[in-house]
Image 1: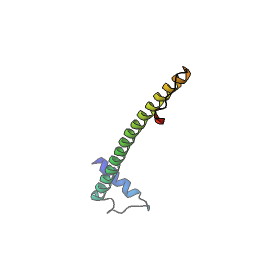
Image 2: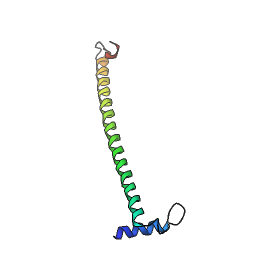
Image 3: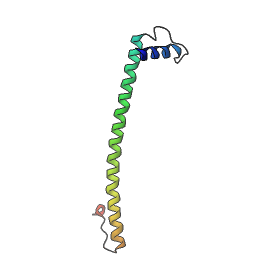
Image 4: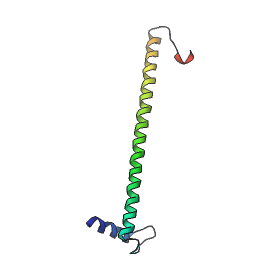
Amino acid sequence: MQRALVIRHTVLATTGRGFASEAEASPGVIKVVMDLFERHMNSLDRIRAENEAFRKEINGKLDKVNAEMAELRREIRDKKSVKFPWLS
């Protein structure tokens, strides 16, 4: 209840055009705004999770390429025959 009063007071005090009307600060409008805000935050959480999964995938591929490059460097340093798998 206290939180709803704080939200209502905030909505009444400021909006994009300066002041809100009583209708704009009604519990129904506040609920709709809070629901939209919650959906937006859930969407951001989903996007963050997708980005994290993509980052892990890319880092795994980079680790694989780095390991292959390290192996090629060792072969060159040891003056062994160098094989380039992408040329075969």
